[in-house]
Length: 249
Image (cartoon, rainbow, N blue to C red):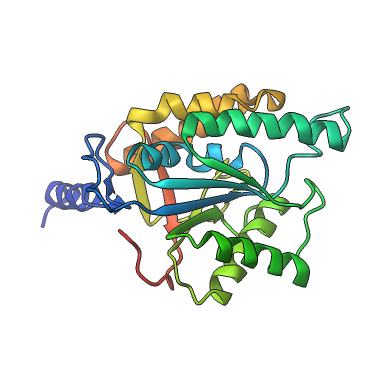
């Protein structure tokens, strides 16, 4: 097999990849009736789920799935010069606006931005939330992310997944790869070309974070690079935990 044939074969294989029936090609057909699933996207702060997989969330809700956007904190420490209570109120409203665009339902947990914890009580809290929501698929932070809150969030979800008998597929998403998400090796790609602008609009709902420079400097290049890998204009990439039972793929 020569190089040209190998590249063609790899491209054909990639174009067959799907997540919940959504191929990485932009011309996805609607899912058949009765195929509705629930997906949890669990992020450490307001704007993490949107930047990590806002495109996928838009595609899933458009396809008729239920998406629940879970925020571990309310971003209490995320606005310079503003107290925790006021910042939490501001950023909670921003989450609500972002979820209006993605079509997701929002849920807030009780941890504090910059002071997140890993202990028995926090393990229990995460496990009970996921058990109560009973999802078909969960996405969260890469557990060795350089941001401590991100790593803690991923660790709590990973523990809950194990203690719930690994009954749903667990995927990890990336944010600011190279700076925050490190040593990330995707297993799946999703073409977000058709909803790339909508994802950006959802992220820009987090006005207090002045995300434009961060988004243009990190996330737009990531989407383009992952798109090159997946042979489309823009993509998001995910890593499936290899011990997951049944991938819905």
